Length: 289
Image 1 (cartoon, rainbow, N blue to C red):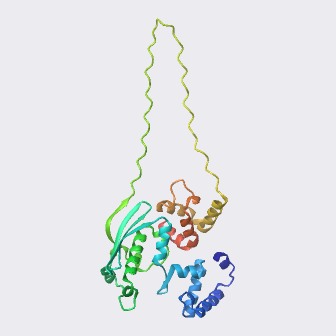
Image 2 (image 1 turned 45 degrees about the horizontal axis):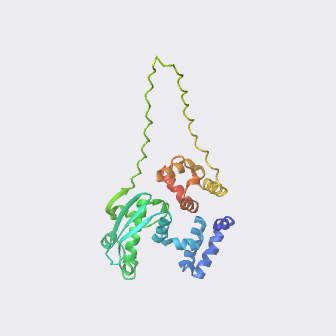
Image 3 (image 1 turned 45 degrees about the vertical axis):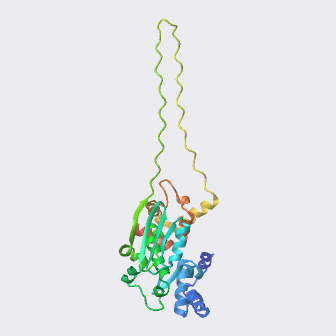
């Protein structure tokens, strides 16, 4: 519904001014002045999302849009990701967890010493000083998601969480790739009975007719797409545009699609990510080309 509303705006500059003033006067969404309100209004128009959605999923830090770790974690779980917490970080020293996604499992940790070395703010009143457990868990989540499903952060500014994956990541165990199931053994070929020896003294009988091998079974034709699938494919093709071939290669490389599959085979969570974050998705595809 937000997309239809934004498409009706003919003067975006005027809309940003009006919405920004309204946000600032209401004090909603953390806007305490008109400049902050106008910035939020501009982000809403650019991302085609409601201010409630932006406020729930992002922070504006240093003038940049930064995805909240809990919002990214929720997308991870919706996409089938699983987590097992080993250390919650409530001791203020270390958080550690095991993450599993699409056949890969990693165990990551983050310590308060690593946060200090990375320049975290521990001044009185800061989040690191007030709730170190929350901050430790958030850093573990960001690092793990950056490894296993970076598409959740594609195009978003996630601050130091992703930038520090390499120097601050501490693997507590190897990456375990799922072992593909062994292919079923082919059934043994039927034994060929030895041909009968013909006794020249006996009446010669005609050889039995050899049965023709059965015709190969043709695979059934692909099922016709439902109306909902057709609408989804049309929306994706419109969003992707001329980047279609590059996007298909990207889908295959990321494991979103398997060879021979089309856009209708994308998971619902993937479709939502593409349609709600089209500019970020296209940037990720272009960067991988």
